[in-house]
Image 1 (cartoon, rainbow, N blue to C red):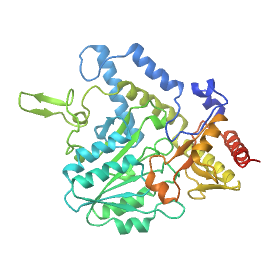
Image 2: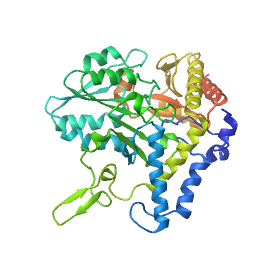
Image 3: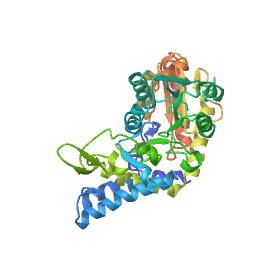
Image 4: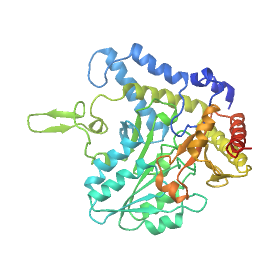
Amino acid sequence: MDNQKIRADFPMLIKHPKFIYFDNAATTQKPQSVINAVTNYYENNNFNVHRSVYSAAEKTTKMFEDCRIKVAKFINAKDSKSIVFTAGTTQSINKIANGYYKYNLKKDDEIVVSIAEHHSNLLPWQNIAKQNSAKLKFIDINQDGTLNLESAKKVINAKTKLVAITAVSNVIGTTNNLEALIKIAHQKNADFLIDAAQATPEIKINIQALQPEWLAFSGHKMLAPTGIGILYGKKELLEQMHPTQLGGEMIEHVDKDNFKAKDIPYRLEAGTPNIEGVIGLSAAIDYLQSLGMHNIEKYCQNLGQYLYDQLTKINGVTVYGPKKRQTGIVSFNVDNIHPHDAATYLDFNHIAVRAGQHCAEPLTHKLGVNATLRASMYFYNNKSECDELIQQIIEMRSFFNGN
């Protein structure tokens, strides 16, 4: 991939050439094509969807529904009716928890997650387990941060009703062996949910190969606007889901006492949707596919490996996760410097990294720390930016040590 040519597609990078953005796991920058798609919607196609019979609104509805088809193809799902538009991964998982498992978990049933989950794939299951008197169990990680499959085999059993696992850790960037985990879950007749929020920006997802019951991801982490996400579910499960919101456009018929909901996916999409977000997501998928997901995965993997290798050469820097990197996410700490102080120092030098627990507090505790620094890179980042980060860390150590 031509990194300089790619960077020219991103207005923020053009306008701020000295600014190094290493917080892509939080949200990615947007290419001009996505910005143009959203602008074009507001300038030329600003009509509500699924409601009106006039031709202009019908055109917007077609744009909206074409994105549903495009998303299904992007993750290789069989049927676009399995695609539900949401506000993001958090809402998708909450819909699954409160619309399905709330009604399908009995006392002493078990839900299994890993200790490395983002809070969005932990808190809903904590809540549902308490409400339904079910049990929440955890798969442990190995010393290098990879998921322990032996632990998974012990924790997942005949009482397990759902296994909910992230595809990629948002803290240490490890990719989980989804094929093996799904096989273990299905052998025990348990459902499987993939939190793909950190995977879809870099890694090709193949629903038909993996065969999970559920999958969730966010648009804003893969070039699209904020506030748009995807819930994939097997059709037979979506048809059993209770809508977590009621209102306009999700109904077939209403009388004074009752209503009849529409078929999926519309029964799960009450109210006016995030139309501009869907149209922006459509443009984002086009952009990613123009580069090739395999090319993006390889580039981010190589960049993550490069930064990991350079960081490990610095005395007093601890890097978390396996030696062989799989993504562009690298978390680390600098001895005797609090991550927040380090992030502030780097900010003064025009480098944006994340500092904290990264919405995965149980994992940071498992790593034996209160917080880490996280540099998360994407295909518009490059090795020269990594070199600048390394140089600033070296100078920062001297600054804080009074040298």
